[in-house]
Length: 276
Image (cartoon, rainbow, N blue to C red; front, side, top):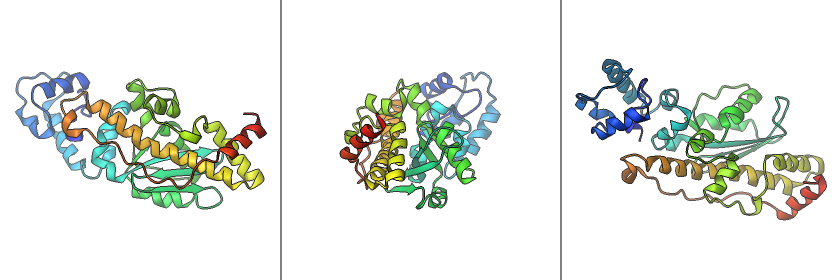
C-alpha cells in the first residue's frame, strides 16, 4: 500500500489521491504518466523530488512516512514494515508521573515477550531496539512517554497508534470497546480493565500471590496480542475503500500460544478484597 500512497505529500489529501488513482496514477512509478490533472497547492517538481526520497526511504525508514502522514492514515505503512513491527502495552500503578511501571508485554507476530518489575524490566530496553515500528493503543499519549520517562530513553521508532486509526473508522470506547465492536472475545479476562490490573499488582506485592501476577501478565499479553488483530482489521477495512482491495487484503493472523492464563478464582478474590 505504501507505494500506492500519495497523501504523505504536502498538498495532496485523500480526495486528490483518489483523483490520481482514478486517473491511473496508482503508484509512485506511474507519476511520470501524469498529464493534465490539476494538483492544488502542489509543485510537480517538489512532488517528483519527494517521491524519489520516498523510494529511498521505503526499505528502512518508516519514520519518513509516519512523520508526513496524519495519525489516522499511518496504517498504510504496516505491510511494508510488518517484519520489524512490535506491538506493545504496559501496565502501571496509576496514570500520574509518580506511577510505577509493573509489567510490559511485547509481541512481534511470532514471539511473546514479557517484562516484570523486580525481575527483568531492563531487558525491554535492549529488546525494543530490534524493531522499527511500534503499534499501540493510545501509546503516543501514554505508553511511549511513560517508557521514555521511566527508562530515560528515547524511542525513535515509527509509531502506529490504533486509537486514531480505529476512531476514524468509527471504533471507539477504548481498547476493550474496539475489541468488542470487532468481535474479539476475552474469555476469563472479560471485565478486567486497567484499574483491575493495578489491583492485581497490589495483590501480588502485598500477598506474594503469583496467581495474581500470572493473571496480570495474561491480561497485559492479551492486550498486546490483540493489537495485531486490530491492526489487520483496521488495515483491511481501510484497504477495502481503495482500488487495491483484492490484491492487498491481509489474512487474519494466527494467534500465538499464550504463556499465561487468567485465574478466575484469583479474579473473584481480588474483587471481594477491594470491593470491585
